[in-house]
Length: 209
Image 1 (cartoon, rainbow, N blue to C red):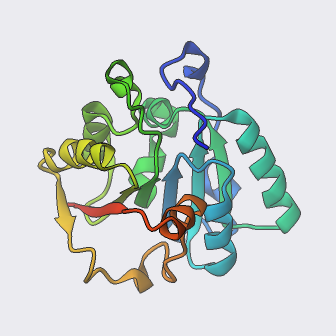
Image 2: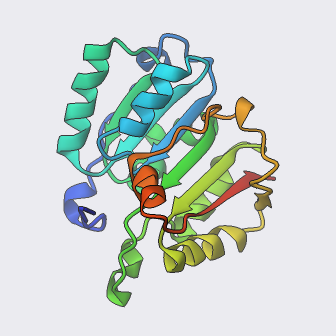
């Protein structure tokens, strides 16, 4: 079940302090992947446990999920995984934490809230201003991964990213996952559910040029 949280609420104007990478990770020089809308973090836990060649950061707007995920990180003793609470747009526009985008090698948006009602479309995470922010800050060669089971949402995200001249679509079928943040193509919980129901999944990869 999808649990919607209004990202435009004043409650999310406050930005959580995110420490320097040297304080978060055992090896801060490893490539960094950010998962936006990481929910309970199951996907990132699977990645971090399976692949110690990358650092992972989950950004989630539901504070309780982040608190639980942080406790789980400590319990498992993971040194390549961190979670932050807040609206990703607010975090990335805060000058103090803007370093995150310049450090990131890839960002994923996995099955984000679709916000079906027309008056709620402005609540969707991938908006033109947000993409412009990423395009102006991400390094050349860094990647964006989008994935959803809602065709209309996919078209919306695809349009907002592809109309930015700093991003180019990559061929999914020939993409070399072994060198990516997800070398074993681990699936999210939602992805497993959709596949089990034999529903369509729409996905695309973009590179900053």
